[in-house]
Length: 171
Image 1 (cartoon, rainbow, N blue to C red):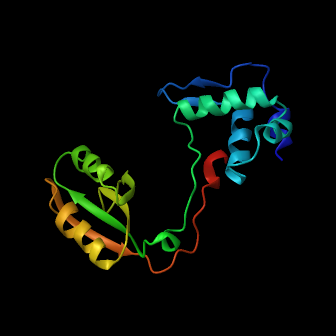
Image 2 (image 1 turned 180 degrees about the horizontal axis):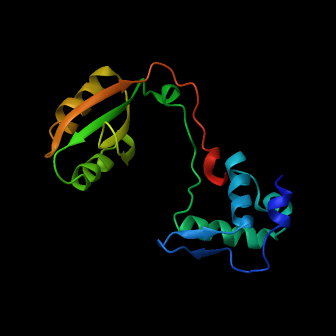
């Protein structure tokens, strides 16, 4: 796999330390474990251990720590179309005043899968997954535009998803 990552790991026994901003700093072994799980989230801990040079028990402990720290999640990623969600869109939102209340309200909506505060043309981008166009219209028109502070929205309806990957986590 990435033997250079494992071979270059420090003698430091800790798998992560906190950075100055409070987020965990991960060592090369933890990064290699994440990479193994990104390739196959069901990969056995024994196989991961063999690839990164740790025992199964040590891998199990590190994975649990990464989960507890919120560094990663292990989830089943579905294709929305195959499970009944025929309409996806990215919605750009412009806000008057504080962005946090609007971002929190968007985060609480079950149809909203992704929320990010941005610099540029929009204050917030939200990815929405809906059953159909009527559902999307309802979410945008009656729920998002009705939020206090929302000045305007612009919707980018997905016609075809060409790439979706989660392999960027250890680059």
